[in-house]
Length: 105
Image (cartoon, rainbow, N blue to C red):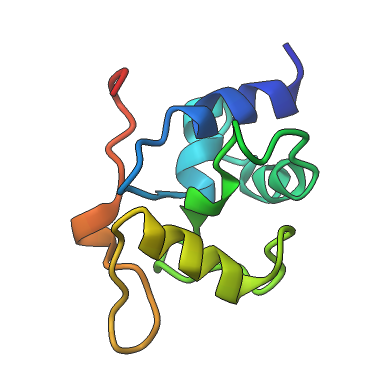
């Protein structure tokens, strides 16, 4: 399994209504130092319908200004469609919405 395939396998597991961080996905994919690689993998996502890359945000709950499938506004709209609310400063409340990622949810 390639590094990207490991990353995609983790991202597929992020449940609707939750988000994960780049670092969290990297850790769960096998290497906590792959956070930047996670970004590259998500930018090259071959299956946006099956791999919900929009559910990956920064550690402080920010969406990606370089979201590959339409920009940060599109990512925010997709997260809101999942039921995720944003704080007044435009971030995801990580205490409320971060996926634990330790089980087979």
